[in-house]
Image: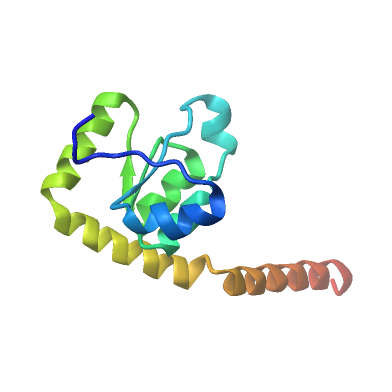
Length: 134
């Protein structure tokens, strides 16, 4: 692995405080198969977006939709593709900066716990009122 790329593995609470603050990007390397593609939504995605880290991930359906909508990361399908993405972001740091900002803004606007709780409550009220008042 090139000297400018390093991998860190920290236990969870310390991970956010220690490793994530040092990272330029966050990689979510889930296996690319039918089960994961269709049914996996990676909770780490929202942590990384909230931390302002662009995400590099395999093409999981829901994760892919969010990455595309927010334009806050890259998707890879094989090692060569990942290698090309890493080279690109090493050269084009301005892309990382803009993706960092967009990811953070989208996390604050759409995925924070207060907003999600309110959306959930509104949906419950809507469905209950449809069920009992129609």
